[in-house]
Image 1 (cartoon, rainbow over the protein chains, first blue to last red):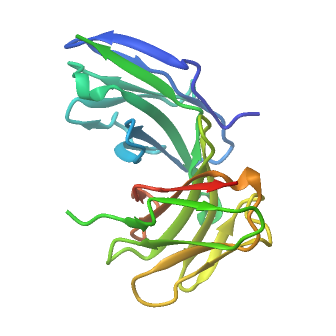
Image 2 (cartoon, rainbow over the protein chains, first blue to last red; image 1 turned 135 degrees about the vertical axis):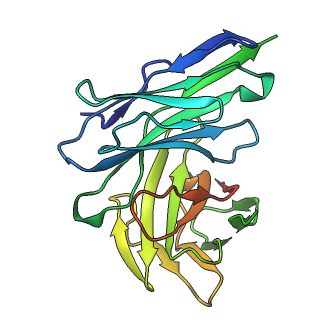
Length: 116
Length: 114
């Protein structure tokens, strides 16, 4: 089974609107972390936001927020007030903390295109 | 702001040749990683390194791969005998101790095996 599933290969959003990128995960580890990274066309991986499995509140970082629904095993990224510079690939990733593992497992990504 | 750097940005090599990809992690980070991304696919974990030894590796990281921290700043990935399927973007990353912290990625090295 896929550990991280991103079901939207591509998304379009109008500038200044909000967009939600979906991510579901699968783990039996009670302790884990969820991450979102942005990959612009230039190729680098830019960290956006982190949510720990025991965090009581949803993470927020500027225009990025993470809609964490633990029972549903989903960690959707919400980008508010989209900008043209938000056009990129977005990857959801998970770290399963059991036994101190540090490897990130990535989803297949969602390509977001922001339209003027 | 400190950043992870990688050299070269693009490496072209012939099948069967050895390549060394270089990375300079962020200076106060203690954990180092290599990931790869075949064109158009997801990012895949290769190996993590801590305290001068491999702490975790994936099934991709077989005997043709090795990592080394030859001095206090560099972290290298060696591919002994490259294959066509090794063509990918290779990312180095580093992080501080503490499992809640993000991994900072370098800009990547695009490896093309011909």
